[in-house]
Length: 114
Image (cartoon, rainbow, N blue to C red; front, side, top):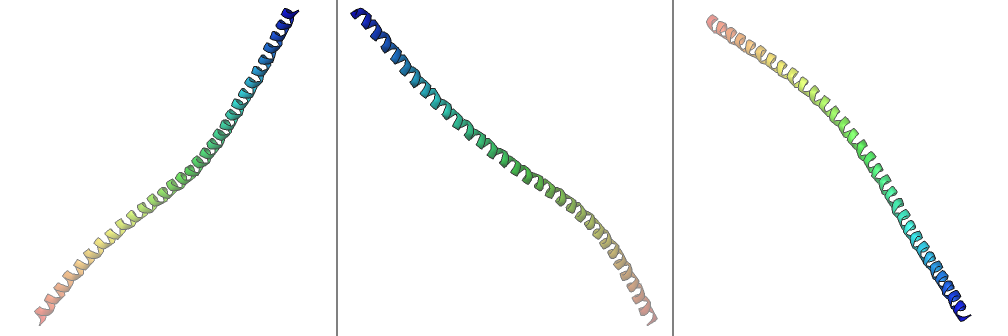
């Protein structure tokens, strides 16, 4: 009977230890799972913030590229205007030189008449 009680006590003790081990193991894996879930949520939030920043910078880049296009167009317009002004300036110089020679010719005629 003592041997039977000892075996019974031994089995109950092993069963209790096994149950305690399983409870501790369950709690451990539960805490690991919760920690992993928090990490995953944090990662999702970080990814969302990164996506928002990427979209923001993408919009800024598009605006900058649009501004560059506008500035390039304005620069081309100014270059064309500069060419036109240079042509006018050359034309005015030629006319000025023509008038100066005409004035000199007229001055010479006036001196010849005097």
